[in-house]
Length: 130
Image (tube, rainbow, N blue to C red; front, side, top):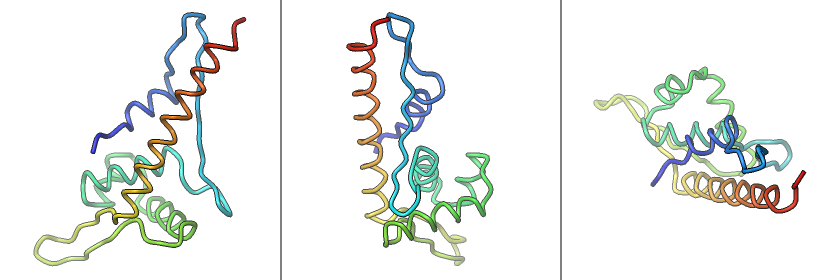
């Protein structure tokens, strides 16, 4: 599974310039009763998948552990199913991984974000010719 977090981060923080010198910044938030999924939660789920640990994921992101738990809880409440599965303690000192549905949510958001960003760039290049 290829991570596109850096590419997405680049698109939101340091966008490519077009020949005209203009660029587009795309921000997407998925909402149900409240916003619950965007680039930040996407990066959190990617890091959890990479490190198999919420604590290590938050350390890598510079995010507090309690904020990560709140983000995960909000995602799960809005979607109605778990996106992470934690195994506590034991000889391997526990681990956290994404559920199959959690992986599906992550991949779906990446696809949507990539498609919307590409479409926005196309529209700017075609129509915003000032």
